[in-house]
Image (cartoon, rainbow, N blue to C red):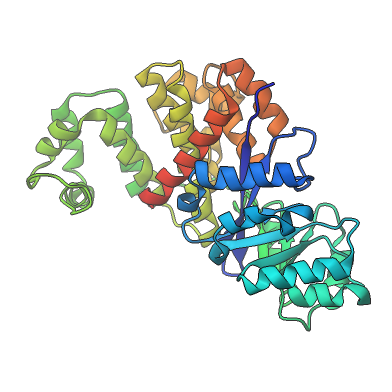
Length: 405
């Protein structure tokens, strides 16, 4: 059987909803989704090789990487391949000899590595271990809040950051946030507002952008699109400033909307306008993570489509991924938002009913957010894509979204 690697990236926030790092899960066994690699061989091969070969240094964006490791991996030479400046080694409870483990951690700490203890129950015997650690994490879905709070109070006097994991939604995050200083850091893949608002109205500027988006998607004549642009001076200014910015690298100055349309074409315009729909939304810090996730979804789906679909399908896969989070970002039900957008039927079908040509691609992308390796393997077989290639596309999409931001 061919070996494969599956990488799941789970963001970790501080109290202000700023990302401080990611938990990276490197998996090859679909039956082992919640535990670290359980042998030295799997730890070394999955973590060291993946870290270097898949370019994870770039996608971390100078954030911390929380990496689960087996106990025997802590004494192996492969850790020398990992840069200690942004690595936090996660240790899980197991049958350990505390004296030997402390000696190992002391040696690694001298090399500037940091440690996190995951779901450890405090006892006086383990006090030296907690003093050595920089982080302690607790899973809110596997432990009651009362149990976790009791554990944290026993270590609250120590200079150790406390992470609460697997938070389900923004409301739970806010409730836990109010319990500071028990919790310093929070992990959740979904910081959307607690509910959408059925009667919420879009602001006029967003509606104008959507109208332009519809014109571009229907490939209206350039003079029609140009005339529509002229009704929004701020939008004209934004487009020309963007094209003439140093980062865009145009060889000469673009001075009119018509020149911009002729030069960039429909593909550029609908991508730019789709991002502006989100940019015009008033979002909190946590939702910026959702926006980043939407961009990753779109780019990853587009890359996946290159294996067997057309360029036009790839464009539509990008739209599907990007708009899959528009309800969470706007606070408006998905059906209501899509009613204002002239999207292809396959895109609408995938978003509203999880059916059609593009639905399996969206489902595969979601597997990487949910850490669902078994479903990912099944979808890869359905789409005739190698899981290692999908992992590479995932990391490439993360890097693309990072540069875009």
